[in-house]
Image (cartoon, rainbow, N blue to C red; front, top):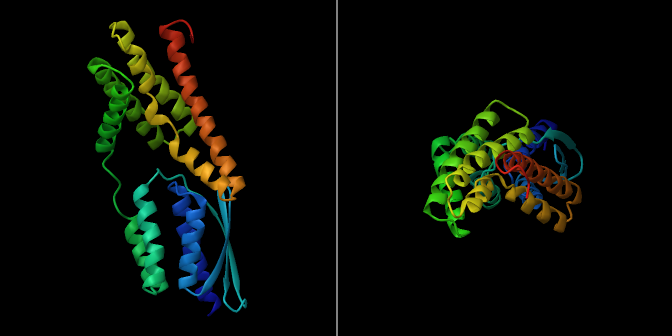
Length: 255
């Protein structure tokens, strides 16, 4: 194996793991998939991850050459489709003995797929929050208000994210907008107004980072696991701040 080929493998694996980590895949799966592709290409792979960067070292089977790459982890939206497709790519590379060129072509096809229509996502997230409202005992009017408040809040989040506003500010503003819209249920005298207010911000709860953080810690990836959990708790605090402002405005109290 030549050094040039080793360089190509290292560059691809660095890009592969950065896409997986950036789209919300827990660390153990990223490491397994990267090592599986490396084994299919005849190299050993070692990976160290943190919240913002990942370090990858690729060594040939005879330990004659090695390449190290340090890559930034991009902040992609959570994508279960990428999770599944990129994991499947690692198995295909191993089972079908794919060449590096074939793996790169397949990777490019997966990452070039168009994202879900933002309007469709907006509608489905609003519908999901309205369903949560019903699940927690809200009536039909509370559900309608939750649906509308979530739609406005999530649209605000999409707009601010597109403008690359700091994500902590995005969470505070989105939580405030959604909860202040849902507070209209209090003025209308709806019996389950509190449920509408509480469920209007559920779309912001960072479930994936919390779960990934716990998985990473139990799998021994302590550093990135703790950083993910800390980041998730920071986002939860931002949600609480946004809702607190609403409560102080409409009820003159946090109680």
